Amino acid sequence: MAERYTRTEAGRILGLEPNRLRYWERLHLICPEARWGQRFYSFIDLVALRSLQRLTQNHVPARKVRRAMTLIEKQFGSATVPLHQLRLVDLGREIHVVPPGSELPFNPFLKQWAFPFDMPAQPAKLHALAGPTPEDFFRSALDCEASTETLPQAIQNYQRVVELAPNWIEAHINLGVAYYQLGHLTDARNAFLGAVQIDPLNGISRYNLGCTLEELGELDEAIEHLRRAARAMPAHADVHFNLALAYEKRGERLASREQWTLYLKYAPQGPWADQARERLKSRSTRRKRVPPIPFRRPS
Image (cartoon, rainbow, N blue to C red; front, side, top):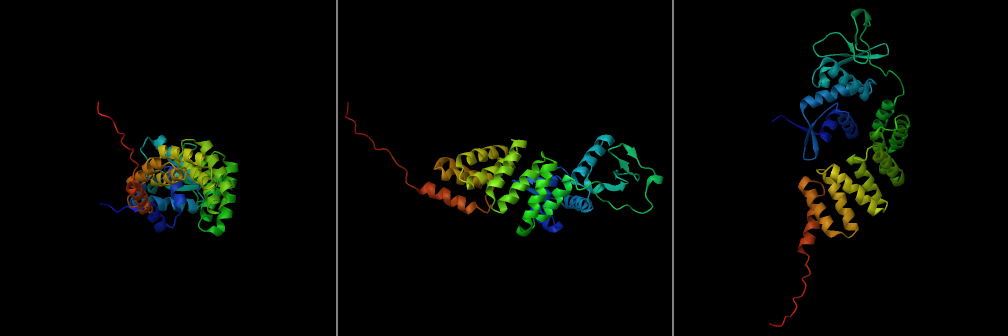
C-alpha cells in the first residue's frame, strides 16, 4: 500500500501550517483522501503541495491559481488538471498557464495564447500582480499564526481581509481562532458569528461558535450550535466530545452519554478516548433506581 501522510505530517514535511493546508483544500487545489474524519496525503499530493507552495511563495494568490485551473479545465475540455503538471509565468500584468502537453503559455482569463515574440528574453519571476490583495493579507496572517507573539499581527491581517472581502468565510473563521488563542472570547464569538451568517450550514463555524459560547457561559446557545455542527459533520469526533461536555453541564446525562459513545465511535484511539470511557463507565456502574413493587391483594 502506498504511504499516506496525515495533514500534520504533510505540514511538517513541507513546513506548512495546518490552516494553510485546510485553506487550499477548501479551494480544491488539493484533494487528499478522507478517512475516519482525517485527511491523508499521498506522495503525489505532496508534489502538488510543493508546487503550490512555490507559487504562493512567489506571491501568486491561491485563489487566482484556482481560477486559472478552473478556466483551463473548461476551455480545454479536460478533467481536473493536477497542480504539479501546471507551469505558470507572468507576462506584463497577466498570469499565463502552460497546459500539459503544450510549450506555449495560455492566458485563461483572456482566452489567448502568448506567441514566442511575446515571451521575455529571461525567465520571468512570478510576482504579485496587484497589492496588497485580500489573498496577500490572508497569506501574511497565516505566516503570523506560528507563534503567540505574532498573533496580534495575524488578527490585523485577517481584519484587513474581512474589510476587503467581507464574504470570505475562512478569514472570519481564522480571525476567530486567533482571538480565541489570545483569550479574547467575545471577539472570537463575534468573528465566528460572522462566519455563521455567511454560511449557516458550515459545520466548522457552528462548532467554533458553540465552543466559544460554552466558555462564555451561554450554554443553551452553545448546545444549539454544537448540535448543528454535529449534523453538518457527523463524523467529526471533537464535535461530539464538546457536545457531551455541554450536555453534562446542563445535567442531561442521557444526551451526554450518547455523545461520548459517538466520540468513541469516530475516535476510538483519540486523545480524549480514555476520558470518554471513564465517563461511560461511571454512568453504567451507578445503581439505577428501581420503583417498589406494590402489594396487591389476591382477587
